[in-house]
Image 1 (tube, rainbow over the protein chains, first blue to last red):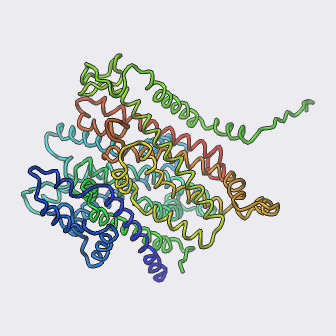
Image 2 (tube, rainbow over the protein chains, first blue to last red; image 1 turned 30 degrees about the horizontal axis):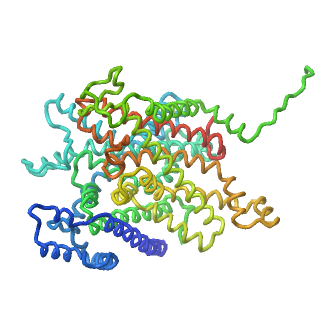
Image 3 (cartoon, one colour; image 1 turned 180 degrees about the vertical axis):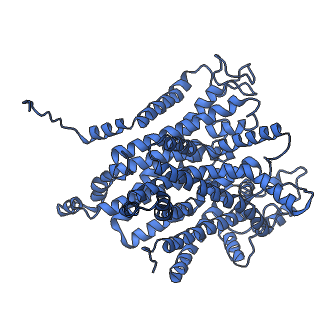
Length: 326
Length: 291
């Protein structure tokens, strides 16, 4: 299994190189990173422009720039940013931590809800409960994430108005200044997280609950579940110990495959709630034609997705003894 | 036993599919609603008294007979804007899904048919695309290519073909060892003929179902992209752009926010149901425990 993991990781290296290369070239060709500087009034002296171009390696061809970047990354240097006050490496680390906090909690919430709803739907197939859950599942699948997030944000604002106190925060990932020590800042972060987490979680929840329902139905129709029932086990025991444990396994793969979609969802969610996370970093960098920053972003996001998928495949082998990797 | 002749009607494949589809009531209703929406957008938008660029003297008025969806602060008729947005969003999604389906089918079928090293290389490229967070890459590409609708469709197709390729390859892999392929080869059919005349038509069921669902996914990607400012740009409009413009007006002028959102949901919802019905009709093996 270790050899398999190592081989998978080695195979993903070219994937990362090609993906970052394509994105790097696309961003480099899409606009002039110095356009903001050039349109300044009074116009900066030519020497300043030349120095800035040199700092960003713009005096070299795109291929050479990419080479600088990829060799720099190996030493932990993510290249010069168009926004001269920003150091890409540490900024990316900080921003991704904020985003992973959101993604992690949202995925956990989505998984727990999806398993609950999926199992209930499957056990009570074609009941009113099942039809209600199915209806909402389809509805959430068809709902644009940004639209729902804006709606939830408005709901949060009116909730605050009714309570007469700012309980739910709708702007930013945390307050700039907090009084009252660690507990107060934890409470502050939680208050900022509630609405964005729900917004992000509902998307995956819809897809996963449908999947969990189908997976559970399949298991409930197998012979070994029938046997467990025939032995006279209590139905609760059959459901949790025999059926659910098997029905959960496919969800591992689906969760991993959806990570890219969740990161995309986080970009939208951060935009609606004005978080300074990885998503807003990406959008700013694209607007600034900052090829180094965009490539760095993609490198981290794609590495994370690949690692997550690998972990899911390995976990699958642990959970399902029929699968062996050689 | 009364002496009655047994009536046996011959039914073509298409009739069988249509019969199975009609049995899925939700899908039939969805098809009607979607057709009505498309007709409203493409014919109604053309007939409607206001166009997208018309500035009326009514500013920020709530829905009325004159302006069914109200107007915005500049005096644009929201009904006209939503219809135009629907045209653009549906156009992008359908074109994007269509191109993705054609490219993906050819790609996946070729990889699956030849197998071996070619298959490995081709599917690795598809996997590479599937590893990426689509919205991020689409934003980079959208920023690069500018805002015309068919380029946005190309961006969407450039990402989603990989999904189709996986599906098409899977089907072709299971079909290529079948007797009819062997028979075709025995009478001297070439590779291209076997792929496009024998394998792809037999994979049509899964491919059409997949393409339908892809339209719904593409609508959601396009609207998200336009919402973020990397898709369709003013002066043209899309449903995502309309929601983006209205996001500060949810409280004060809710009609600006709710109508475009409602249209997105209706389109995506009906397409998903139609896809469900088509799956039952075209691809009975794939249907999970239904009745």
